[in-house]
Length: 98
Image (cartoon, rainbow, N blue to C red; front, side, top):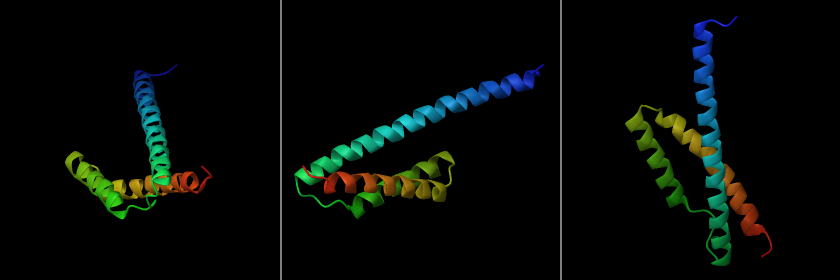
C-alpha cells in the first residue's frame, strides 16, 4: 500500500510531467517559427546566421535567470543547444529547393 507521502510525490510528478509536455510543445512551436523564418530568409535572400540576434536571445535568457534564481550559465548552455538545433533546421530549409 502506498503511503500518503507516495501519493504526494505522484501528484508532484504528474505536475512535473504536465509542465514538461507544455515545455516540449513550446519548444516545438519555437522550432516551427524558426522554419517560417528560414522560409522568409530563403525567399528574401537573408543570410542564415544572425549573430546579433543570437546575442539578444542569450542575453534575455541570462537576465531571466538572474531575475528568477536560475543559473545564467545553465540557461546560456540550454540556449546554445536550442539555437544549434534551430540553425540546423533553418539550414535544411534554406538549402532546400524552392
